[in-house]
Image (cartoon, rainbow, N blue to C red):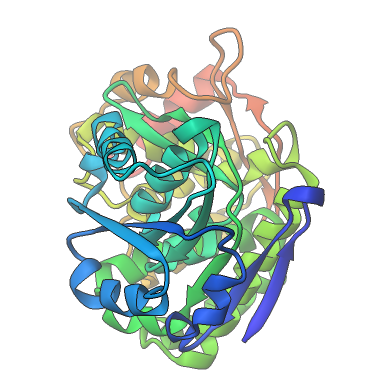
Length: 360
């Protein structure tokens, strides 16, 4: 087992990475301060891993809630179901919430924990590659709104993250590839050496080679932990983690939550960001070709949906947390391994990218 620290002073916490961690109750118990525990999970994960987690905690007063699986259920209504369960069970502010699932469960569970009685402890047990390398780390919690993704939420850090690589054995291929989109992101924004390693080892990752996956998870979490420690609430460098996300969120909102997995939308968005970076003369044609090729090799889409034209993209991108005074601001790439902070993009170049990239 490897342990990384997200260094945030009094809010610091460990990320445990390894195999067989769901069967190590001591990892759970050292972060649970009272007898009341609730596990939040979904209909996909509950039949596979819920019993294992419950057995770890059989000496606690434990409840659980199984929610529907899917991005379309990442709503305030779902969070209200969590509140209903906590209140019906008379859970106090000393209770602990365990989020057992992918990014949707982690985001909603963390948001519920942040709000219930103005904050209760919670643990992240991510069960997808995307959640293990990205969404479970850093304390971003929240839900979607019909007009914009992740527009309602809070920064609220977990007590720990338990990333058991063995759970990826039951992950379907589409979800595995979606997680690789966020892994690739770390190489693009700050770690060119890691990007080179990914180009050389992508087949091993797709084949679920244990050693390669362990390296990718640890390296991704290390990058994320360092960025969060430097900028917890996204006033500076943490914004670079949103490479491709403004385009990606527009896709998810525009075609309907759940049609594209988050990582799939981010892959397309990152290719759009790479094309726009080339229009600023920062990336070369070869750079953009390498980026697109790696996403394609990872079995990810790289072309935006035909039903979203440039006008609709711009309308959707106007609803984004990075925007200031109505100006669309994006994370772009100066080169592979170096992202910009949010920049006010040239409207003409942006429209050219939206009208031409991937369009027949």
